[in-house]
Image (cartoon, rainbow, N blue to C red):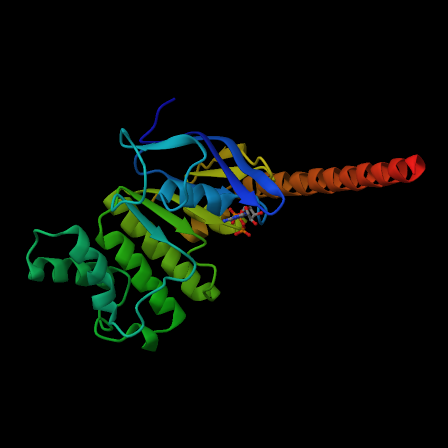
Length: 282
Ligand SMILES: Nc1ncnc2c1ncn2[C@@H]1O[C@H](COP(=O)(O)OP(=O)(O)OP(=O)(O)O)[C@@H](O)[C@H]1O
């Protein structure tokens, strides 16, 4: 199957003090245009590694990523990235922070049009009355709103989210999840989100991709969710299959835990045997 976004045999090897370590291997995933896919897996399995490779911020070791028919070879304005903390210029206003990216991408647009575009997305994320506040004077939730507006204002084909709501209180998190979904659906942006939160993945996604534990992490299971769009939180939670999917995802994570414990115990036993054999030989 080919998709709007194709990740084919994607792999990443990091050089470490103990030699090269294969973190992600043969990671295959295709997304349709406008689809929202979450990556879920244990801490350290390689979710951010996959996301940053697709963003072009992390060199790909094997395989590749094709977006709308073009293989990527670095970062580009076709992909907006939102991390857990938005990294704003603290002395600049919300508007100036969004304008930074807009000015670089819309070189031929008039200053007024660029300003209108930045203001438009800041309004959508609820910052219409804080355009001229300095980033350092904004709350964490407001800063994250600026980060989201900054990504959308570049009108990307694809949005890459790395635990975008991880540092927010639960009320702000729910509000921003809903705002984000509204803009995404309207702009038909294809999205990959890394999260640790099963309920967040269930509420936001069309499909949830479960990653196996690393090293050599890959796609372990894919759940296609039946919840309608636009999403209404209460309806999603009331859906007869909600807890069934939730249970399957948690079961997958627990199975990965057990496999890891077993593999760790086998490694320890092997190391002990090797030590004994060395002791016997001397
Ligand atoms: N630059 C690097 N050099 C060496 N090892 C790295 C590097 N970046 C990440 N790693 C290792 O790769 C593995 C995967 O890291 P990654 O951040 O992709 O995992 P993750 O699933 O996103 O984790 P978390 O859920 O905790 O954010 C980890 O063991 C990490 O220590």
